[in-house]
Each structure stands twice: as structure tokens, then as C-alpha cells.
Length: 532
Image 1 (cartoon, helix red, strand yellow):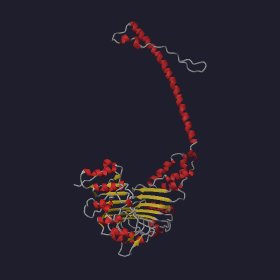
Image 2 (image 1 turned 180 degrees about the vertical axis):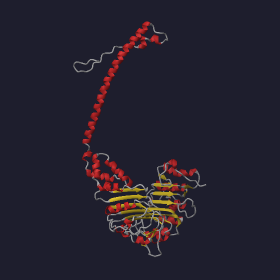
Image 3 (image 1 turned 90 degrees about the vertical axis):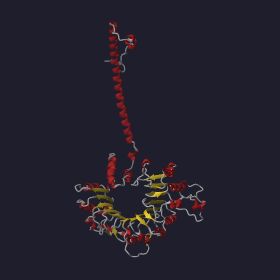
Image 4 (image 1 turned 60 degrees about the vertical axis):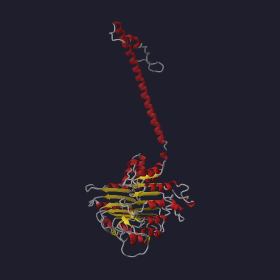
């Protein structure tokens, strides 16, 4: 036990007597292996007693300091916690309006329907206030996501009903993916849809077939429906539905996944602005387009059928985006007039366009295209160059060819590349010089043969834009910003022919190499196929 100060109570640690250094006291003895004498043994034992006494004093002093440090650490933690509490009390979030916080929550919701429920629960799990705000925000609870991929797995429709109870009277969104061709839970889904028919604004249904309750439901039930997406893969009957009387329906996407010829769906065609139809539909699409005067965006994928009726020119005055993937349809394009067209994408299966079809379509449309995408469409190089000369507003050009074809119908070859090259001396010297695609910003090339020297020279001429490359009247033209490649076949063969394109990237030009799924590759993954 140590004494304490009578005045302040501080523990008084007795002074420790100095100990002689054993290395000096027993120096001579440590240098030998001799047995200590009796006198040395007494001295060694006394030194050990003195060291043990001093050790107890040092350990007691260390214990005292450790207690002091523990008390100070506890006090430090309490003070920091107190500062955190005070900062929380003075936090600006306590004065943050709940209405603004609710609006932020809604804007933070992901686009994928499957992720919305998780996002809402995570927002509500931050704190009690956020949960209260989330519960009082109806738009957070206005979507339902149902999945059925197993006959024994029952979709959580009761849970979705409970979820939608917090949505108040706001419009609703439903995404249902039923991937079983004979799903026993489909009637329950139909009852769930019809129970909230007046509140749905967007329906995304992947189902074996349209349930009879919806096909033959009461008319004018879906009064708020704005967007409808349907994928069916078991039946192809969609000829009578309760959607035909939806006054606000503007966007329709219908995909017939079974590949059978389906009859024309009955829809409010005259009110549609966006239309997507994939795979086989037995209808006259020229007649359909005549019935949809306000159509802005149209996607047709499959077989374009038309009857022998000669309608003359069929004009879609508001159509800005047209994407077509079909095996035929030449007569379809020969009659179309699209004065507002800005985005045109056409793909087929190795279709050789007769001379003049594409050029006539572009001239007849009197349009100002900003994007042109042609996949497996073959026309003569001279006609393709003439088409490009009429597209002064084009900003994005996408060409996909089959690299197995190297015949004269392949359209993106040296002659086209030379027409796009601003440094082409023969072209620049011509009196009738016309700039080809003066506003081109993005060039995407897929699955084709290419002369890398000519391509790199063309890109550099449109990217760097040297002062002497163009006539004085052409000095303010836009420059190329980006290129994308996937599965490019090189011609000629040598490895050195890669250097022009590599040098472009090394100089800072944006070149992306894509894989088979269209995803950018890292440099070490880039693949170039050399012809044998």
C-alpha cells in the first residue's frame, strides 16, 4: 500500500533506490564461465531482491497510469457522444421539409421494377423519420412486381395488395413475369389486375396468354392506362381485349414469342404515339400506319405483311423514329413517306436492295435524319455514297455487314471511306465538291472487312480537321467524336496495319471495341480476326 498526500489525496509513490548496473557489478564474472564465489552469490541475491522491490513499484505506477488512461478514454468517449448528439440536434436535416424529402425519395427510385421494393425498404430503414416519410409517400408504394417461374411457387399477390394499400389513390404500375406455359396462378393475376383496373397507368405483362377475364372484361375499365407492354408465348389470340377502350393509351408494345402468325390486335390505333410489334402479326401494316396519324416512334420486328391494295403514298407526318427488322418489306418502304423521320434503323437477313430503293425512300421522305443504322442490307457503293450526300444532318452512322461476304454488294468499302475522307485530294479538287456527312459525330462498324489504313486516314481527317483539308467554305464542319468496333476483319493482313487505329487511340481519339453482346472490351481482350 502506498501513502496518500494529506492535502490533495494523491497517491505518493515512494522513491526507488538506484540500482547498480549488473553489467558493471558482475562484468568480470560475466566474461567467464567460472562458478561465482560465496561473496558474489550473496551480492547477486541482494541485487535480485532490490530489483524485485523496484519492479513492484514500477508495476504499481503503471497500473495507476492505466486507470487514469481508462478514465480519460471513457470521458473522451462520453464527450464525443455528447458532441454527436448536439450536432444531431442542430442538423439541417431536422429542418428539412418532409415534402422535399418525399420528392427526393421518389426521384431516387430505380427504373427496374424488380429493384423498386428493395429501394423503398432501404430508404425506410435509415431512421424513424425516413420510415414515416416513406410510409406517407404514396408514389413509393405505387408499383407491384410479380414473378412466377415455378408451378409450386405462388406469386406474392396478397403481399402486393398490402403494399398497394399505402399508395392511396395515385396511379399504379404492374410488372408481371409468368414464365410457365400453363401457369395455374394466372386467374389470380387476372383478378388482381381487374381489381385495380381504373388505376393502372403502366402494365408490363409476360404471360402464357392474355387471361379471359381481361380479354372479355368490361369495357372502359382501364381509364388511366397510358403504357401497355405484353409478351405472350403460348397463345396468339389478342383480338379482343378490354384495352381497346382505354382513352389515355398511347404506348403499346406487343411481342408474340411463339413465332406463330397472330391476328391483328384490337387497339385504339388512332390515339397511339408509340408502337412496338415483334414477330408475326397477320395485318396490313400500311393500313395500320394510315390509322395512326399521331405515331411518333415505331418498332416492327418480324414479318411485314401487306395486301395487294394500292394505297398510293402512305404518309406518317409525325413519325420520328422507325426501326424495322424484317425479311422483306420492299413494297412497304416503296409507299412510305416520312417527312419528320430522324432515326431510321433497318436490318434484314442478307437482303440485297434493288437499285434506287433506299435513295428513293430518303428523297421521298424529305426528312432530316440524325441517325442511320443498316444491318445486313446490301446496296451498291455508288448509290450508298449518293444517299450519304443527301444526309447532311446525319450525326450517327451504324453499319453492320456479314464478313463472310466480300462481293461487290458490300457497301462499306474503300470507295465509301474515300468519300468520307476530308483529305481526299481527288474529291476536294473536283468542281462539284460536296461534303459527305458534314455533321457526323459517331461511326459504328460491326462484322465487316475494313482497310485500316484508309479507315484511319478518314477518321484522322474528320477528327483533327487540318486547316488545309477542306475548301474555305467548309471550315466550320463538325468533327468525329467516337467510333465503335466489334468483330472487325482486317484487310490487308499484316500486324502493322493495326498501328493506324492504335495511333488514333493513343493520340486521344475515343475508340471502343465491343464484344459479341455489345459491351466494351478492355485493351487486353480486344480481338481482331485476320483472314487466311
